[in-house]
Length: 527
Image 1 (cartoon, helix red, strand yellow):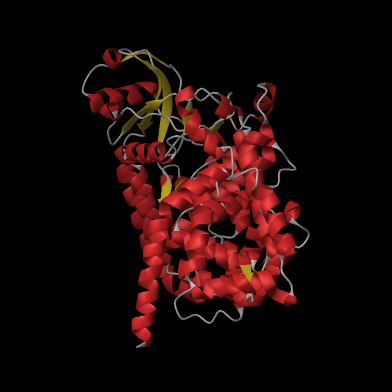
Image 2 (tube, rainbow, N blue to C red; image 1 turned 90 degrees about the horizontal axis):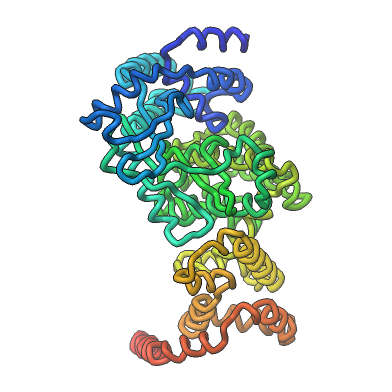
């Protein structure tokens, strides 16, 4: 039956929507079973290129001038071919710079509109069944998919995405984003810097180039988490052909047509979910699913809580080394079919992105532990990010049932220091010029200056926090000086004491003023 399914779809030779749908594998378990998706994937690698002359004619038409007036050299064969376009390597005549030219397939837009119309019509007939069996609106699924697909047809949007990624990773010596030549771009042609790296489809070449595989993977996981939790703009299709290992240890991305955006609220909820997982608060974790749009508002989460607890505890019960996203996703797939859960489009891309990158990690290093890199990044973020919302989440992590978790604080510091050490040891840091060395000096240490200052402010102004911290130091009728000393020993080599003293002295008048205002407001409210 599955083979017949694949043969029937394979006969739809112009159905680029199907080929595009394949790129979502395996992120939509709420729509298509994984075994069917595996059969569909056979089609994904069978996308024929279109003739070179047709591609060259499109480039000349879009640029309004002969090919040889812009490029001194262009490859006679395609470097890569995909469902929406194909890529050539060329040399700019004016500057001699090597570039990649992406050209859109001819007449692809009317074909896609036709296929979307057919799928939308089919969805209208299946909508009742999908709502009853899957808890999702089939027409809405097609609309979401069609919207993302049509965005990929406009290469000017992709050029803008590249510029956004360049801005986000500015000053990060471990990530390479190609420059885009906007003056040469149009809706059907994209020209960007050629990336001279090693594709992640070739792990042997990466090892032969002398690249530290573990360091490269650490950089890759950290870059992915920055996109997801810090920028809210992430690469939606980081398959091995779109990710390169640079010989200096950097990770490079290409093909920015498929990106997704998370709101500030969604980023904070994702961090909440991590905090609730750490605290083993599965009721709140289920509520996070509702806030993220996986469950309809008002859905009773009580039946889902035991399932979430089982999935998480079975996944990390033996330690971080036994955790992988694919096994968790497989268990979550069963949850999707048993409960009214629908995966929003943006999070299908998140899941697909994480699964794909984890797959790259396993290809390059089969025993790689994804969470052993991810947790240290999250720990560093919680400890050092000045965002007030993250400060609040740090407090949630450090207090459980009103009791201060000294061991948890120590673990966070150890993990955060581990992230800093691994990142700063990457060879890419050594390649940075002297001008950037001062900025990087701070990244080689766990800079807790702002965290200490904020903690002091909270202690002074927040009566609830002050009471909790005093109780933390005196619980069980003893002073917890030993634990405090242990924490200090962990961070003493990471803190520039004179710098902290200067910062505190500089803020002292403001602190006194705020304290006086707070005291006066308290007095007036009592009266």
